[in-house]
Length: 200
Image (tube, rainbow, N blue to C red):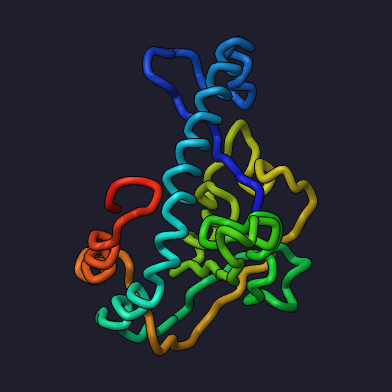
């Protein structure tokens, strides 16, 4: 999934109004420096993430056992929402798109080196229409920027989208937002010695 960004925000010390051509304020040297820093951060993230993968694979069974001890709860979906491009309206709950390229925010895609992680499908569903809309277009549905709607700023002129309302029930949900649910996993990782560095 390509990265999409919302409108530029006002930064400290600048009094001029923010416009659609915000990047014109910066010099080429500044942009090049930002690009260098961004590449350094990407490299650091790759080292921190992928250097831990072999160790995570080694203790995979222990991690799965730890997850199974967590308090697994059902989740009832009542009027949850997914917004998709119209061309995918016949299969709005398909996970196929999440496997393309290098994947999305939640999972790796088919182009990622299989020596690191194997692809798996992932699906984003919002608890309401506004949440789903913001995930799709990165802006509130009522906001405009210099008269341009979120759909127009998505750089997909003339494209329609469909809003699908979902009702259902998921029997087993691992809620990773709670510290208590993550403690058994943290104990496994804390007791594991990394081959490429210090303890996790």
